[in-house]
Each structure stands twice: as C-alpha cells, then as structure tokens.
Image 1: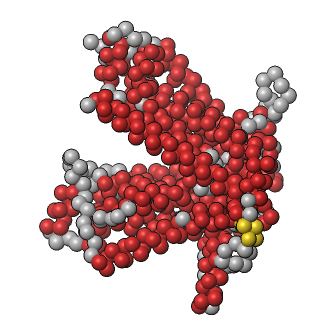
Image 2: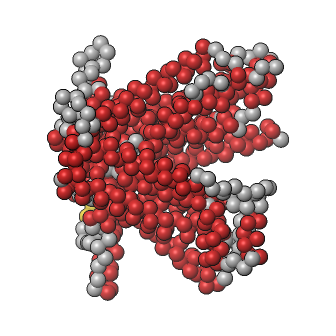
Image 3: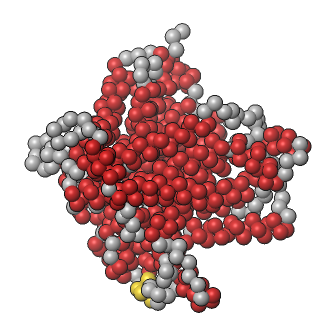
Length: 564
C-alpha cells in the first residue's frame, strides 16, 4: 500500500508556492536589499568602502564594541541569575518550586524598555534603593548609569531564556548518571561542574545564544536610558536623521545580522560532535534531595534576593502608574487614578491597534506554521525542508533591520487602486510582527503534528474523507493545543515589539501599545500614563499566557481521556 504521506497533488504544491512567495516577499528580499545596499556605491558597483567608513569613525567603533560588551556581559550576569535558580529548583526539594520558576519567567512579559524606566526609579542615583543606602550607610551604587545600566536591565529581562531551557535540560538528565558519579565520590560543586551542568549544556547554550541575540539587537532599552553609543540606536538614528538612503545604516544592519547568525551558529557548533543523550526511561530523572538547615537558609535567601530584583520592574511600573508625584523619595508622595483615565481617553486606539495587529499576525503565523509542518512531515515534496530553514532564519533578523528593509523595498510603492503609499499603512507593522514571530509558531506546530500519528489520518482517508476534510476534522483538532501555544507565543511577543514598530508606525493613529509606551516615556510628565499603558500591556500578555495554558492543559486532558 502506498503511504498516504507520499501522495502528491496540486494542493501541496500550491501551498508550497504561496508560502515560499510570502517568505521571499516579506523576509528574504527586504533583508537581501539591506545587505545589497551595504555593499554597493552610488553607481551600483560592489564596494567595501562603506565598511571602511564605518570602522574609520570612532563613534561607530565605540558603538560596535559597546554592543558586543553589553551582550556578553548580559549573558554572563543572566547566567549568574538563571543557573543557580534552575539547579536549586530542579535538584532539591523546595516548597513553591513551581511558583518560583513561574515568577522567574515574568520578566519576559514586560517590554525591557518599560522595565528600564521602573528600575531607574528603584535603583537609579535618586532611586529608592540608593536613597535608603545613603540614609543608612552614606553610600550610593550607580548601577543604572550608562552601559552598566543597560546591562543590568537586559540581564534581568532576558535571563528567563536561560532558565527555561536549562530547567528543561536538567529534567531530562538520567538519574543513573548522577548516582554513578556519587558512587565514584563526586559531591557538591564537583558533581555539578563535572556531570550535571555538562549534560545540561545544550539547554544552557540555546538560552545563552538567545540572550546574546536579543540584547545585541535591542533598540528600546538604550534609547529610553539615553544611551546612543550602541549599534541598534546608531542604526535607528542614521536612518531617521540622515535618511533611508544612508549606507552606514545598512552597514550597521549587516553587522547586527552577522553577529546574530554567528551567535546561533556557535551555540550549535559547540554541541556538534558531542553526545548529550541519556537512557532516561519512566521518569528516572535527577533525584530531588533535601537541603540542610543552613543550606535552606542560603538557598531561600538567594532565591528571594533574585526574585526581589527581577520582579522590581513590575512593582516599579505598578507604583508609577498610580503615582501623582514620585521624585527623590523611596515611595510615591501621592497617588492617583488619572494616568489610567488619560490612557483610556487618549490611547484607547493603541490598545485596539495592538489587539488587531497581534491577532492578525499570530493567526497568519499559525496558518503558515501548520502548513509548513504538514508539508515537511506529511509530503515528499522536494526542497520542502527549505521552508523550515527560511522561516527559522527570521530568528536571526533584528526587527530594526526588517523594518529598514520594508522601508527600502516599498519606497514609492502605493496600495493597489489608491494613491496611499504602502509605507504609511499599518499593514507593514502587522507583517513585520508575523515574520518575526513565525519561528515560534512553526516550532509549536511542528511539535504538535509530530505527536499526531499518521495512522489516524490514514483511517480517515480509508473511510472516504478527502485530504482537506482530514486536515480540517482530524489533524487540526488533534494539533489544537500546539497551534494555540504557537498562537499565544506569537501574540504575546508581538505585543511588546518596539524595534520594528518605531520605524514603521508613521502616524499616532496607527501606533500600537509598545510605541505608545515609548512616546509617553520620552518625557517626565508622560511617564505616569506610559506606566499605566505598560501595566495594561502586561495584563494583556499575562491573561493571554494564562488562558493559553488552561486551554492546552484541558486539550491534553481531553486527548488522554479519549486515548484511555
């Protein structure tokens, strides 16, 4: 019998062509134009002169090394936060371990540039902590100044990438490996350094590479903190001040793409040729052990300190949203609800824009992600794997670079049958969100389809169901949990996107919440409403995450009951 997945027809080829056309139009060609522009002169001849000009100017050299230093330092400090947190909660018996891990992920649902403003009020020179330190000990800690402040904010915001990947990797370690090491005399730090951490290295490197890429590409945090001597702010300033034809903006974009790809490649390269596989069966993972009295005090003390610092942005932004006056004081001097009234009156459209753009982008992502997963796993089309490669390449493309590519590509192009320039519409914002978040939805859809056995689809086919009916009534319902997980991941990460938005939002009427928060935060008088809008953004993202988890767990329970 010919396997169902080997069947071919016009449908898969049509889907392949449409997806390839989408990726070419809205990812490959715009980014290709950015790269091409960096390597040609005014006459169109190839040249390296723009790169020579870039490295010949001290401000650009300084920006390059600053971005590299901040990214590496953020990975280091994010590791200091995440590695002990992951090890303690996975390796030892802890009351509230799940709560601790959940709270540890909360920084991801707040835009880092919003957290930067809140952290300035708490840890800045005149912030709550330094006011207390000065009163008690006569000293202050300049932790929020310049590049040090950017590193501090980025480390706190992005360490959950390492935490999530490391926790998953440690849970997959075969407990027999640990027992063997214990029998051979390995204990404590030696056991962790020689056995547990090396076996969890794939998870750590995956998280560390993501932290590096995210920090290296971040635009909003340096801008809000007044730090412009980094690559992303320099690219933004060149394009917005000099113009879309300025070659140095494209040179910076190429450097950002190159280092993003390099970080992801190095993470994969380090693991290549090494075996991290274990023979874990039936839940024989690392055995949880009890902590001694003093060990418990130290462990809980460290965890509480980490959580206090990492949750400080949420507390700060909440207090700021209600504060009438908060200046040179530990806590606000007066409270008000006016900021929320201002937001609902003046920025209600931004909330609606965010929901519209993110819902459309996430919907487009799961449709394309499901289609790519189907083509790869259920057909024998040649070159189908390239769809996965092309879609996943968006991970290495900074939002700022994609936005520059769109502005370059659609310059002078009008909407069909109108005189409206494409670059002045909200469509490009939505497409940028969709392209940037496609890899997240694709991974979820691929994992979901891999768990649907092909025999279920073959059974439907044998009973007379068409391919389209089988996909609609069998495959998609069984993939519902994974599809929703991809949808929500795309939605919540797009909701806090600023790098692409800041260039593509041509009018305030088109602006989403992230851009509105940025505009408010640019002035001291507007930071209250900006904080209120930030709180609303966190609530939207948090509710989306909560309901998605509820739906996924309910779907999983339903499938298990049906299988039982």
